[in-house]
View (cartoon, rainbow, N blue to C red):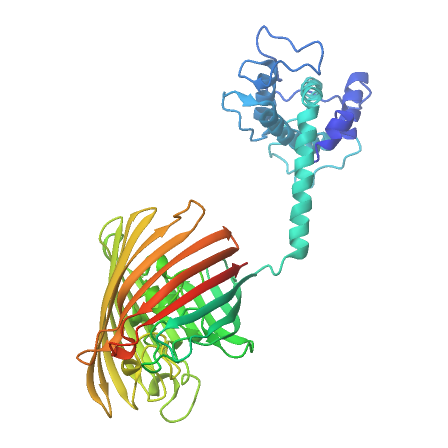
Length: 531
């Protein structure tokens, strides 16, 4: 019922006809008070104001005749009014009155002489109380007094209805949300490169997130980009060290780059990827504020996001976490991925189980309210065409030296890692990891590959959602060969709004490709648009 009727004519035409009929006594059968419900009365010793438009104050208090009268209406006609003997504002009082008007009008319609009998009425069932002349007079007085407040409520409801109708008319889908991210990335090496050219590239992602029952998720992502890596022309040779999250060089050709489905089973969720699934999609990475899961709002480089162990393997497969407890050993995460370039190929040495693969197992611990940790194991196999640390596909790695990523035909590897994330406060966090890969490379032999790092991050550093981060570590390298290739990265993300941020930063590589000369300094300014 729209309270506009009550405010324009004080009562609806149906109510008006009933009140007139009551007054004239011309009804065939007079309406009598419900014997089981007492009529509404004013507070003892208190009379209604002689001027119905007069309101005592801005606050309606228990004991005021208006308060007592509305409580009676609410109790008698089942309005569900939220009056708990506490003072309320006139507007809040009018909201309750509006609810009661919506309840009383259909009752009046049923009492109209011309109204047909209710089809739901059954012999022996309790019927709703009749609206008496006395009750109608009380409702009329309340409506007169709070005409202005009822009008304001109607205006607000009308505006809300218009917005809802507009949103429904223009919504993308009833089951699917559209999200997007656009990155403009300005980068260049200021030293250690054969050509210190500055480049400007882009990466664009459109994500369709669909849910069929409110608990599942289907992710379909389109992507394109034209940003190559800036570390492929270093003086010490091509390397994946310093490779940035936003790198994506397919000459701006649009294609699907992620297709996965997650659904609940018992007390956990099962993640199934048909294309380009990652371990971090279902496994905790303990990357703290650095890890935006390949998005453009965290660290600048792939290495600083999280431990390189999560970049061993990816593609098509399945993963889940089995919960144990709230504290201590919290859960067990397991997952299996076939290589991104082999999972869909039904030829010898390819497919789900005969080509590249990575099998992950991880124990997740909650050691305190502020400290979380994980122990990770990955068993993997790599053909000569794919780097070890490259999400299961492609000859170029995402992190690590060229020596470490080199996977000759038939490389078998066992990787072990430990990670932690410590949230000291809302504005200070620490994280770290250490990882070892024992690789048996067919034509090279056994190698121990190492990587470790520690970071400190300051979220909301400026009170506007900014993020400052500093990480120092060593990208995956071959132990006992050359120098340790340290990686030092610092950045500051400044948020102009919820949809726009700019992240300037520096990455310094002390010994690219494990050669202790020609250290490389990379400057980056990343602009990220999200919607």
